Image 1 (tube, helix red, strand yellow):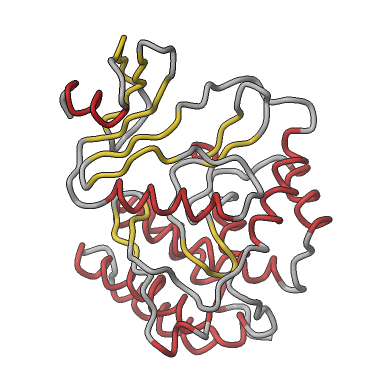
Image 2: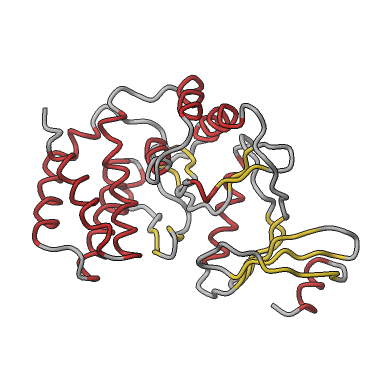
Length: 287
């Protein structure tokens, strides 16, 4: 985006622009204006990814449970957000984060999925449910998450006969694993790991880079554990605010599987054995 267009959108002259490192997908910059305001600009793709991200941030903000960057403007190939200065985490950060995350999950919808498809990383994420999937988390998650990733792995050459057989075996016990966990659709961040939250200047938690949809909150919590997990205080505060149903630990590998399969499809065979291990653990869940 050129400076003239950016100034037109923001309604004032720019005083500076600096690149932000660390992103693996977008070209990200902090934009400063002559009045002293700062904005966060993401650009570099024209596939609608930024529009999806902006819509997801707006949806998360509806819960009023946790700080979300304000969306200033959205285009097909750019996203402008308020710039949130990062600061050190305050005392009790993870306790506050856990409680706020549980409150966010209480924000519900009348059906599973979302009004638009979006992305999980750079992988398309299918959210628009069929009439059956809209009212059944089991059907939505199986079709739109697990089967979608399996089909993608087959296309990419990662799903060998062993993986295909294990998915077939999983289908036989899938209903048993998920039985008893039914809840109304919860507002999910969709991709919450250590890189997708931050602390603001007051040391309070902020959510960024979502892959939003309405689903089962256990799926959101499982993703937080993919790369080692958050502080135990986070999970304790979450459960004090809104306890999980019995059997959540047993179902956790089911929700990790979606993200591990996505990493397999994004980054290659280094994630193959982790996917196989999760499948084998789930299939043993038969009594």
